[in-house]
Length: 423
Ligand code: PLP
Image 1 (cartoon, rainbow, N blue to C red):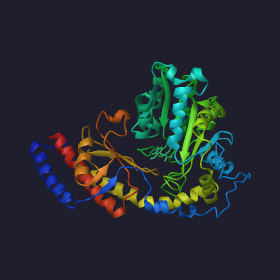
Image 2 (image 1 turned 30 degrees about the horizontal axis):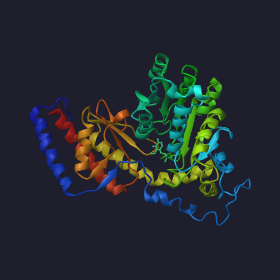
Image 3 (image 1 turned 90 degrees about the vertical axis):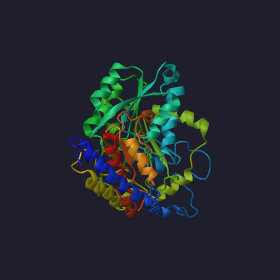
Image 4 (image 1 turned 135 degrees about the vertical axis):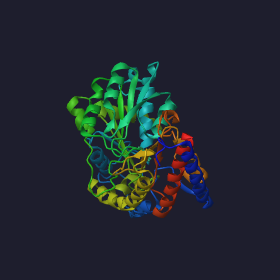
């Protein structure tokens, strides 16, 4: 199917064939959901041993009774794991509750309202505050900016990370830029890993940006490799130390997609001055995190090596699902101009770019045929994909069989929407 060289008659012929295929698919009355990057029940069951693992022993390694109040930044053994996962020193880590997103929001709110370098550094002292947002990106990052009234500036995402020429130029030209979102490994949604050179350039931004500029380094997929090889991401904190910019980066991750998505533990890695500013605000909100859950996690996964071994079990469940998506994309669109995609080696998503002005229509057609996809545009600030091209596919939850059916619907809908857009 080559739309560019097709005659109107050919296009109408394709439309009628695709419409009849589409009507047949609709008859199946499907109810499938490819919207959110959630673990499947089988993945969640991999961590069932958490239940009852403490066997009545609630004492952390340093003697802390984890059932009681206190310990704002987490128990020692959990901090050691977080420091290992994020590649920071033992005094540069905080262990939180079940959500790293909460820690990101807390950090943004602290920087905005109270300042990470004292009250004069609060972003709200500025008339305008802007954030750089590599696109496509993660919608919940964008929601944090929207809620705080931070203006988002889209930056193109390349195959080795954000376009750093654009990032550096924007920062040099605009002193109101106070932050940048990054998902450096298996980026949501494109699945790419930032190259060493990109990590090194990001570590230098602190030398050209405002002293109150912070990179929000959301390493949500730090250990989420699909293959048995663990892909190393360059250590951002090490690079920052080299350039004297340790305070310019705030790192985050969690066990949401390692153990239980709603009942894991989260980590924040940052310089001790950043951490103490955040802890000051956190101490108003909470007397301490759920340390019992931290201890349960550490008994189950005592170190990074144990985490990586556990992640191989996730990979075994996820791999066939990703293979199914990629096979259907290749069969449907290989060698055509209808779509482009990356084959990720980890993470939770496949990012698909269709022809301009096709994504919204394709997502609507899919939904009407019983296959829910993330709303088109959600991967862009303000929900606005200016070219209306990007669709995020999240294959983790359905069975491989369901996924195969869903992808057949997806392929038909993209083709139909592409032909209709051309007509
Ligand atoms: N960051 C990214 C990039 C994600 O994709 C997700 C979940 O989809 C999260 C953060 C959420 O993390 P948590 O469950 O730790 O709040």
